[in-house]
Image (tube, rainbow, N blue to C red):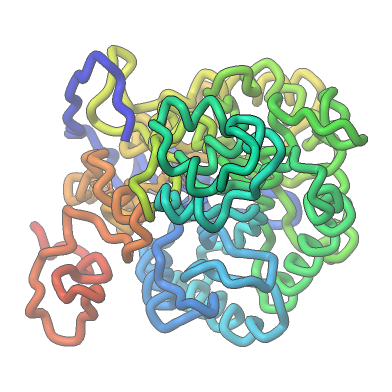
Length: 483
Ligand SMILES: Cc1cc2nc3c(=O)[nH]c(=O)nc-3n(C[C@H](O)[C@H](O)[C@H](O)COP(=O)(O)O)c2cc1C
Ligand code: SF4
C-alpha cells in the first residue's frame, strides 16, 4: 500500500475511558433518528467485505457467524458488506441479485437481530461495479486479446505478421505503437469505465441501474433489513458517475447536474420500490483524492442535492479509487486501495504529520455544516481512524458528525461498544491500524485481525480459515474475564 513519504509511525494508546455513568450520559450512547428508524446509539459499523460468501454469492454459515460476532457487541447499526445487485459471477461477494438469495439474507437479518437482542439495526450496502480483468501475460495479450487495428499495421511494413512483430518490440516501442487504452490494458488489465459509451451496455447503464438497485432494495426490505446503503463511494459504478472525471457526453456526465442525474434517478427508483418504513441512504466520498477528482467543495453540493432529494443519511468515506492504484503483478487484479487515495480511505499507522486518525473529520464537518446551512437535518456518518470513546464523543459534541463509524476498530474488537458502555473500556483490544486485514481483503482471503487470529487455535468448536492457520472469529468475551 502507498504510504506518505514522512513514514512517521503512530501507536494507538488510549488510557482514558468513561465510567458506566459517563457512558450512559454520553451523546455517543444516546439514540438518534435515521429516517424512519431510531438507533439506540450513534455507533455504526460500516460495510466491510470479509470474503465469507461462496462463488454463488450465498449467505453461508461463515457469513452468519461473522455478523453474529459483530452483533453481539451491540453497535447502534451494522451495514452488511458491499453486496452485488447483478446476477453475475463475482467471486465470493455476497449477492442480492435474485429472489434465490432471499432465504439466506432473511437468516442473516434474524441472526443479527437475535445476537444483539434487537438492539442493532441492520442495513445492507448495495453495489454495482464494472468488469475488470487481471493483468495479462504480455505474450498472451499480444497473441490473443489485442484487437489488431490499422494503427498497429501502420507501424510495420505492409505484409508483416503484426501479432508476431509486436512481440519483438521493446516495452518502450510497444508503448508508442499501442493506443493509451491498449497500453493500460496491458499494464494493469482491462477495465471498463462508465465513459466507454461505445459499448452499448455501458451506454445503457442509466437505463438499467435504477431497476437493478430498486429490485435489490425491494428484496432487502422483504427479508427484514431496516434499509439499504446505496454504494456511491470508492471505485465503483455510481461513484464514477458522481466523479469530476465523468466526461460522458450524454445527459449523465460533464456538468455536476449531469453527474448527479443517475444517482438521483437510482435513489428515486429505490424509494418508490420500498415502503416509508424503510431507510434509504448512501455512502459517498468527501474527497476522491485523485488528480482532477471531486473535492470537498463539490462533495458539499453533491451531499446537499442527495439529502434534499430525501436520503435518510449520508455516510462519508474518502478515496479508494482505481485511478492511482498500483500496477498489479501479471495475473493479479488492480486493487483500488493501493495508491494515495487508498491510503486516505484506510489510513495506516505509518503516516505523515497529520497522522492516521481523523483525516476525514474536517471534510465531513464541512459537508454537515453545508447541509445544516440549507436547512437539512439529514444525519451524516463519519468513518476513518476512530477507536476511542472521547475521540468520538468530542466529534459529536462539536457537531462535526452525527454518527461515528468504527470499521477496523470493530474488526479488532467487536465488543468495543459493550465494553465501553459497561465502563470496561480498559479491556478494549485497540486496532493498531497495520492494515493486515486490508492486505487479506486485497488477496480475496478471508479477512481476520492479526490481534486475535492466532489466539487459542486449539479452542474447541472454533472454525479456521482455509489454510488452517487462523481463527475466523474474534475470541468470545464475557464481562469481567480480564479483571
Ligand atoms: C477489510 C475491509 C473491507 C472493506 N469493505 C468495504 C465495503 O464493502 N464497502 C465500503 O464502503 N467500505 C469498505 N471498507 C472501508 C470501511 O468501511 C471504512 O470506510 C474504512 O476502513 C475506514 O474506516 P476505519 O478507519 O474505521 O477502518 C472496508 C474496509 C476494510 C478494512
Ligand atoms: S488487522 Fe486488526 S489491528 Fe490491523 S488494521 Fe486490521 S483491524 Fe486493525
